[in-house]
Length: 196
Length: 198
Image (tube, rainbow over all chains, first blue to last red; front, side, top):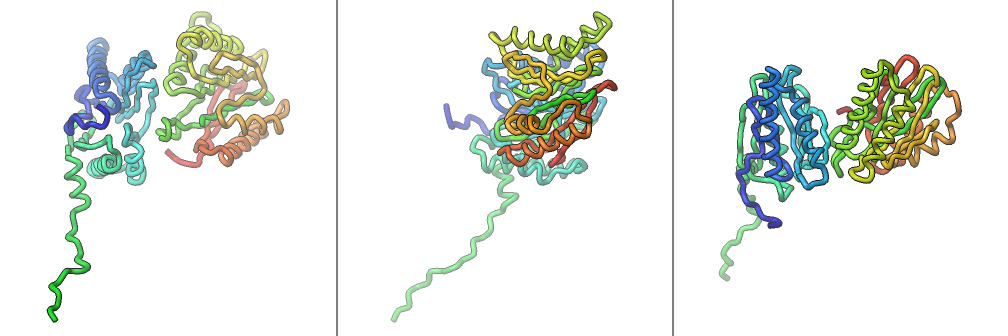
């Protein structure tokens, strides 16, 4: 349909299992389906091995699946975030077959805008609240400039006991909370003409 | 944009690669290690499409390990190079791997060796090799200053000169580089040349 916004309330953070999250960018159907499929494979791993799958393993499973469909038109740009025995893990996986381990990623059409805000405010030892606010701000700035980004900015925290949803703010409301409307300074006011 | 180059010295071989992971205009990471340690005495610097690079290099690494488990002795560098070339050639007309590889190895009987393997399964045993836009600068640099039986310090110096040339002349030059070396003591990371910290 070209430039048409069909929904402003799409859940772009997919809950793979209680301690792992996946993000959605690219094709919504592809992301939802393959994350669900990944969740199934992770559960099967748990049943077969009597232990949770690592974030490394889960991201590799997804990357290998996407690699095998390379060139067939899948569109997936995702981050797998989770907590395992080695602590927090973050991987970027895409439908080209790429898989990168890192501490900070931004994906999607608005990602360059988000990177700018993210890079300037990032430190490894941010508190949870500081990190959440940085993330929220980065999403907001991306939606401000990128026409294909918008709706709701969801922020989740992933800790040793799994993920929790911290916030889900409409970006329009975020705009006015960051940049409240100032009453305009009156420069020149019209007055009645002086009657001679 | 991606640069990989290598050279042979006296009793060692060197491979240098940039460490940027890029997606169109975005740099996702600037500390991505693209030189895989194939086994105790082999290094494989790879550049190419994201998925292909990681998948093909890991496939080669696992097969090299499998050969050693099955036969009790490791593959020679020449055999590993020919194996890689064969896999690239087989896949070429169906589902090509878009990966260019510089393979460096040290064998007890033949000493250090370097192989140039490109994505259309060309294989050459060489003294110096380079891939990517950086090769336009690195190759002439190496042609001018390289000589047989260089010491490690001389080779590192030459690698640094190549990196500096790429940094100053290439329009979208990578930020960081990693240098790995293989000699009779094995394959290991030598050092990094950074301009940014990730």
